[in-house]
Image (cartoon, rainbow over all chains, first blue to last red; front, side, top):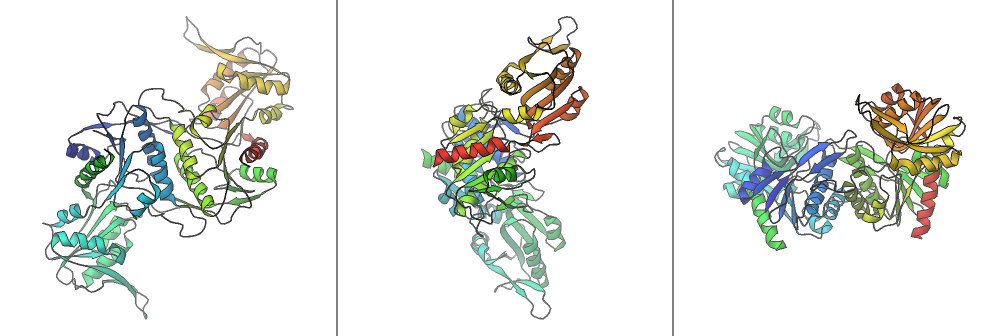
Length: 295
Length: 295
């Protein structure tokens, strides 16, 4: 196999290549004066092509680059193109919440397939069932529970793991299990008299524990900041925030640090100042698995 | 039918709706804090949906909006979605000029079809054969020869029409025919002694004529500026530049005016200060034609 990337900004593609024991080839890339993108690949793959390309901001430009890169690999003679998208854009628009809305993730997935992808690997996509719903090619979603837990193993004492809402409880459970810790989720309560919103663990007492709050994405960081604040008020020793995708808009990181969080960490699906955990080990396994499925 | 547009910036969608005698509906559009686009349509079509959406800069963002709008129309119950793309992005990357390149226009066309388009109408696409090559749905390319000729009819005296290169000669011929004028194409010559590049009409004497230089796109305007300069040196009375798509990068308009051009005009496929000609009449006819083909 040969591993490809269009811009190897944060080293994730290189780590995957190293993990697979394969060569990394970086696409040539430029922008024309009218704003259109251009990519070109200079080397044919040895065996299957593994294309690693993440769809963070500017999402649409990076999507076009991804589609062009798939087509370029097919054109240069790749029989099999396995597409690895560490961060999938538009994943939260996964149904028509209101009449007249598009299902944007469906469009993206169909475009990737139409461009010639033979398999798709994603990391921690918002609703994994969209893959089977919109794709005919094999696909795999990996969630870096192990990488997140392992990061904290020697950094925390008596940890408890909190999900910022009930939907993330399974995630908290998986991380907690690997740490031998208890877990719970956070409920928001509005004080009937003052109107103030509080966010507290449903059942668990966080007093004198290190608290790790885990979620899939940090966007504005509002929910995490609230949860951190109340954990500290309830006697937590230190509070950590961990997510897979550090989307981080509108001063999210400042909001989290200001809320008293000791350390904010994310994986390298989206490059950010807090992307300290690599998802390469999970992706190496995932690529091996889908290759087995294709063969 | 009902005509739709995502942003009706320059009135072209409204003119098409007026020409068809149909209602215009404008999509709701916003950008999320993380940079992703959102579109929503509030009204079902009466009969077929005609979606007018041009893919000028930022091309990839506008492409995503187009794909989302097609899907939203299908989702709200449109049986037929005719997509009208006045300016098609990535149309010049229509083959693998070098090994390892993508065929970007093929990707775009396949994505539009995959999103649910039932027919596609474009204006003056770089290589019209790409439509049949990449699409299974009916498609139509219209070229606004008539609109361009009609614009100049009462504005010029004794006109000759020049193509800036041999490839645009048919275009010059079609415009000239409607004006009852002669036409020719421009050849570039490098002076063997001074190295200076001259651009002159192949056969035609432009002396005392009004010269109209016609092309599909003005990008940097370099070729047109050179042709205008030499037309004036060869005694042309006034020189005009006309194009379909006013892409206009890197100070193109200043370059053209500085070269002595009297008036630079373009159609409204791309909004610009010189988009004085509407392609609505051609597009109204084209929509009627493809509707006939679908029915």
